[in-house]
Image (cartoon, rainbow, N blue to C red; front, side):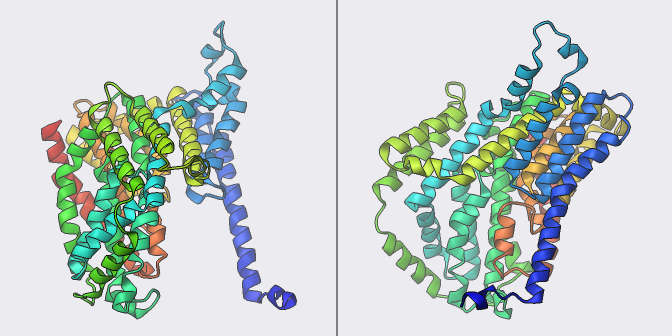
Length: 503
């Protein structure tokens, strides 16, 4: 049996070999890009150490796009390399000449500065909330309740999926966790009830429709709530550090509210028209949901406690920021969950996704801050502002937003996109006379969720739904283009005037 199992076909061997070659290429590519940029002459008006920092930064971004290693490893590598070479990459000659300057100490302090960022801790805390939803099965209960009452018709089932994501989004900072941990496991059980199978012509009966509804809803809610997408919080930190503007949870929500409500109410119907299911009505789905709810039984003690805790956190995030830092509010809720048994300490230590994201975001925050520190962002803003000189503030806002949105085709990570492009866009906009920076910042940050719809790799949930077998490649790219255009136009036509009026 061992001898038989060890036999591999030539095709399998060739596939494995090709995979190793691709992995090796992806390993080399970030280093190669960084070295090539280091060899390029320093642009006029920019300090050499700033250009060298930028070269390493681009290498990190390339690594995040292709991910030969986990994102946290890529980010940590970049921070360590820059800290080790800080004499040439991080500090200006004037800083190094200061009497109290100590290279080793200052380099280390910069390298770990991201780990003290409150936004990073808020992201980590919110991941623990998601763990609570998963462990208590409260998130599953919410989704099943909606399916029970809205699942008879395909159209209302689409609305049920959308509303389930809407309910979970404010408390779940990772749309990947929200979709992969709660929404997808529920809806994956639904298509077989209609005789709809993956990777089969029957997928169009209802499975394809449900999967596209789900990814659409995830993208909309990711823009609707500050706390619904991890890069939203990173974007918030970048906006504050680069242009000094604070965006509260409430301001974010109000800014996107009319557009968010419009999209939530119309997108399931739009998908029903543009990508219609073959089965329109089925009585089995509500029965299945009712049976699953019966298995769950009444609300458990831990579910009730979780509901109280997350509502308390949300209230503190919205109304109590003057008295308690949002990250500290999240940590307070985590402590309460641990003391009451909603979570156990092993749930904290064993949450690999949370710790990975914690390390990843901490290093990205330090790297993005370093770009500003060395003067590269200021130089880029000056150059970009010169290119846009003579253009009205309104037209400049639109052009920068469209460019920011469409450039997402180049990124397989909203985090990488945010880290690479948002600082540059903010700096360029700040040099344009008459531009409303509050509105510009809100336009930029609220676009991060909806832009994820355009590709099968555009946001965390995309590979989940794309890999379900219900969304063929051609369909995904076609629908991504259509709905991406709809979202972008809606943001410009509905969101922009509203934000100008309010802010």
